[in-house]
Image 1 (cartoon, one colour):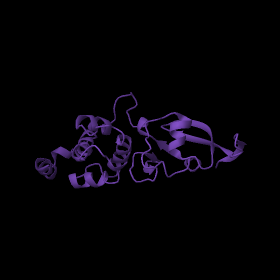
Image 2 (cartoon, one colour):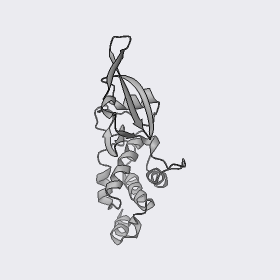
Image 3 (tube, rainbow, N blue to C red):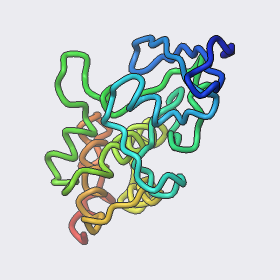
Image 4 (tube, rainbow, N blue to C red):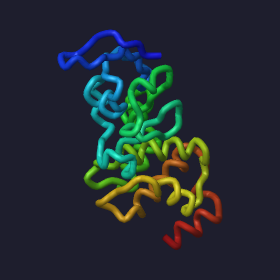
Length: 184
Protein backbone atom coordinates (compact mmCIF):
# COMPACT_ATOMS: atom_id res chain seq x y z
CA UNK A 1 0.00 0.00 0.00
CA UNK A 2 1.04 3.65 -0.23
CA UNK A 3 3.59 4.94 2.25
CA UNK A 4 4.00 8.60 3.20
CA UNK A 5 7.29 9.74 1.74
CA UNK A 6 7.49 13.52 1.73
CA UNK A 7 5.65 16.67 2.65
CA UNK A 8 4.61 19.28 0.12
CA UNK A 9 5.12 23.02 0.59
CA UNK A 10 1.97 23.24 2.73
CA UNK A 11 3.22 20.48 5.01
CA UNK A 12 0.71 17.93 3.66
CA UNK A 13 1.98 14.37 3.68
CA UNK A 14 2.56 13.04 0.19
CA UNK A 15 2.16 9.37 -0.67
CA UNK A 16 4.12 7.43 -3.22
CA UNK A 17 1.65 5.55 -5.40
CA UNK A 18 2.40 3.15 -8.23
CA UNK A 19 -0.54 3.13 -10.62
CA UNK A 20 -1.03 0.81 -13.56
CA UNK A 21 -2.97 2.76 -16.17
CA UNK A 22 -3.66 1.40 -19.65
CA UNK A 23 -0.93 -1.19 -19.17
CA UNK A 24 1.79 1.32 -18.21
CA UNK A 25 3.16 1.86 -14.71
CA UNK A 26 3.31 5.36 -13.23
CA UNK A 27 5.07 6.29 -9.99
CA UNK A 28 3.55 9.47 -8.62
CA UNK A 29 3.50 11.44 -5.37
CA UNK A 30 0.02 12.49 -4.27
CA UNK A 31 -1.74 13.77 -1.17
CA UNK A 32 -3.90 11.11 0.52
CA UNK A 33 -7.10 12.74 -0.70
CA UNK A 34 -6.10 13.10 -4.38
CA UNK A 35 -8.94 11.73 -6.47
CA UNK A 36 -8.16 9.13 -9.11
CA UNK A 37 -9.64 11.45 -11.75
CA UNK A 38 -7.22 14.20 -10.75
CA UNK A 39 -4.23 11.83 -10.59
CA UNK A 40 -4.99 10.48 -14.07
CA UNK A 41 -5.50 13.94 -15.56
CA UNK A 42 -2.98 16.08 -13.66
CA UNK A 43 -0.26 13.73 -12.47
CA UNK A 44 -0.21 11.25 -15.35
CA UNK A 45 -1.38 13.60 -18.13
CA UNK A 46 -4.18 11.47 -19.60
CA UNK A 47 -6.90 14.07 -20.07
CA UNK A 48 -9.50 11.90 -21.80
CA UNK A 49 -11.23 11.19 -18.50
CA UNK A 50 -13.53 14.15 -17.89
CA UNK A 51 -14.78 15.48 -14.58
CA UNK A 52 -18.33 16.76 -14.69
CA UNK A 53 -20.45 16.84 -11.57
CA UNK A 54 -17.74 15.75 -9.09
CA UNK A 55 -20.41 13.77 -7.21
CA UNK A 56 -20.42 10.51 -9.18
CA UNK A 57 -23.78 11.26 -10.79
CA UNK A 58 -22.97 12.15 -14.41
CA UNK A 59 -20.57 9.33 -15.29
CA UNK A 60 -18.19 11.48 -17.36
CA UNK A 61 -15.26 10.41 -15.16
CA UNK A 62 -15.91 6.67 -15.45
CA UNK A 63 -12.83 4.50 -15.83
CA UNK A 64 -12.41 0.76 -15.55
CA UNK A 65 -10.74 -0.52 -12.39
CA UNK A 66 -9.86 -4.17 -12.87
CA UNK A 67 -12.46 -4.14 -15.64
CA UNK A 68 -15.26 -2.72 -13.50
CA UNK A 69 -16.70 0.74 -14.25
CA UNK A 70 -15.82 3.14 -11.43
CA UNK A 71 -16.47 6.84 -10.96
CA UNK A 72 -12.92 8.17 -10.70
CA UNK A 73 -14.17 11.35 -9.02
CA UNK A 74 -15.24 9.23 -6.03
CA UNK A 75 -12.11 7.10 -5.68
CA UNK A 76 -8.82 8.12 -4.11
CA UNK A 77 -5.71 7.50 -6.21
CA UNK A 78 -4.04 5.67 -3.31
CA UNK A 79 -6.84 3.09 -3.33
CA UNK A 80 -6.19 2.28 -7.00
CA UNK A 81 -2.70 1.00 -6.26
CA UNK A 82 -2.36 -2.65 -7.20
CA UNK A 83 -5.30 -2.51 -9.62
CA UNK A 84 -5.38 -2.04 -13.39
CA UNK A 85 -7.00 1.24 -14.41
CA UNK A 86 -8.23 1.63 -17.97
CA UNK A 87 -9.12 5.08 -19.23
CA UNK A 88 -10.69 6.01 -22.55
CA UNK A 89 -7.16 6.30 -23.98
CA UNK A 90 -6.70 2.58 -23.31
CA UNK A 91 -9.78 1.38 -25.20
CA UNK A 92 -8.35 1.40 -28.71
CA UNK A 93 -6.85 -1.61 -30.40
CA UNK A 94 -3.15 -2.42 -29.95
CA UNK A 95 -2.37 -1.19 -33.47
CA UNK A 96 -3.75 2.27 -32.66
CA UNK A 97 -7.04 1.82 -34.48
CA UNK A 98 -10.41 2.44 -32.84
CA UNK A 99 -11.82 -0.27 -30.63
CA UNK A 100 -15.25 -1.70 -31.42
CA UNK A 101 -17.12 0.60 -29.02
CA UNK A 102 -15.27 3.66 -30.31
CA UNK A 103 -15.93 2.65 -33.92
CA UNK A 104 -19.61 2.07 -33.14
CA UNK A 105 -19.91 5.58 -31.64
CA UNK A 106 -18.39 6.95 -34.85
CA UNK A 107 -20.61 4.81 -37.09
CA UNK A 108 -23.83 5.64 -35.21
CA UNK A 109 -23.09 9.31 -34.45
CA UNK A 110 -23.24 8.52 -30.75
CA UNK A 111 -21.64 11.76 -29.65
CA UNK A 112 -22.17 15.45 -30.05
CA UNK A 113 -20.05 17.69 -27.84
CA UNK A 114 -18.07 14.65 -26.63
CA UNK A 115 -17.75 15.64 -22.98
CA UNK A 116 -19.65 12.61 -21.68
CA UNK A 117 -18.28 10.23 -24.32
CA UNK A 118 -15.28 8.83 -22.38
CA UNK A 119 -17.60 7.70 -19.57
CA UNK A 120 -20.00 6.10 -22.02
CA UNK A 121 -17.18 4.31 -23.86
CA UNK A 122 -15.68 2.79 -20.71
CA UNK A 123 -19.08 1.84 -19.30
CA UNK A 124 -20.24 0.21 -22.53
CA UNK A 125 -16.94 -1.66 -22.89
CA UNK A 126 -17.46 -3.30 -19.50
CA UNK A 127 -21.17 -3.93 -20.03
CA UNK A 128 -20.58 -5.66 -23.35
CA UNK A 129 -18.05 -7.93 -21.66
CA UNK A 130 -20.84 -9.05 -19.32
CA UNK A 131 -23.59 -9.07 -21.95
CA UNK A 132 -22.10 -9.32 -25.46
CA UNK A 133 -25.49 -9.54 -27.20
CA UNK A 134 -27.87 -7.04 -25.58
CA UNK A 135 -31.40 -6.27 -26.66
CA UNK A 136 -32.25 -2.62 -27.32
CA UNK A 137 -33.82 -2.42 -23.84
CA UNK A 138 -30.70 -3.91 -22.24
CA UNK A 139 -28.53 -1.47 -24.21
CA UNK A 140 -30.63 1.40 -22.82
CA UNK A 141 -30.13 0.06 -19.31
CA UNK A 142 -26.36 -0.15 -19.89
CA UNK A 143 -26.11 3.59 -20.47
CA UNK A 144 -28.75 4.72 -17.99
CA UNK A 145 -26.16 5.69 -15.37
CA UNK A 146 -24.38 8.16 -17.65
CA UNK A 147 -25.75 11.60 -18.43
CA UNK A 148 -25.59 13.34 -21.80
CA UNK A 149 -27.02 16.81 -22.20
CA UNK A 150 -26.75 16.90 -26.00
CA UNK A 151 -28.37 13.75 -27.35
CA UNK A 152 -31.61 11.88 -26.94
CA UNK A 153 -29.64 8.65 -26.29
CA UNK A 154 -31.07 6.90 -29.39
CA UNK A 155 -27.75 7.05 -31.23
CA UNK A 156 -25.86 6.00 -28.11
CA UNK A 157 -28.12 2.96 -27.69
CA UNK A 158 -27.69 2.19 -31.39
CA UNK A 159 -23.92 2.43 -30.85
CA UNK A 160 -24.13 -0.19 -28.09
CA UNK A 161 -25.90 -2.56 -30.47
CA UNK A 162 -23.43 -1.76 -33.27
CA UNK A 163 -20.48 -2.40 -30.93
CA UNK A 164 -21.94 -5.79 -30.03
CA UNK A 165 -22.22 -6.53 -33.74
CA UNK A 166 -18.63 -5.40 -34.38
CA UNK A 167 -17.40 -7.58 -31.53
CA UNK A 168 -18.96 -10.58 -33.22
CA UNK A 169 -22.06 -11.17 -31.13
CA UNK A 170 -24.21 -11.25 -34.24
CA UNK A 171 -26.71 -8.82 -32.77
CA UNK A 172 -28.18 -7.81 -36.12
CA UNK A 173 -28.79 -11.40 -37.19
CA UNK A 174 -31.15 -12.33 -34.39
CA UNK A 175 -34.84 -11.93 -35.29
CA UNK A 176 -35.74 -10.14 -32.02
CA UNK A 177 -32.99 -7.56 -32.62
CA UNK A 178 -34.06 -6.95 -36.19
CA UNK A 179 -37.66 -6.36 -35.05
CA UNK A 180 -36.50 -3.96 -32.32
CA UNK A 181 -34.31 -2.03 -34.76
CA UNK A 182 -37.22 -1.74 -37.19
CA UNK A 183 -39.39 -0.24 -34.43
CA UNK A 184 -36.71 2.22 -33.25
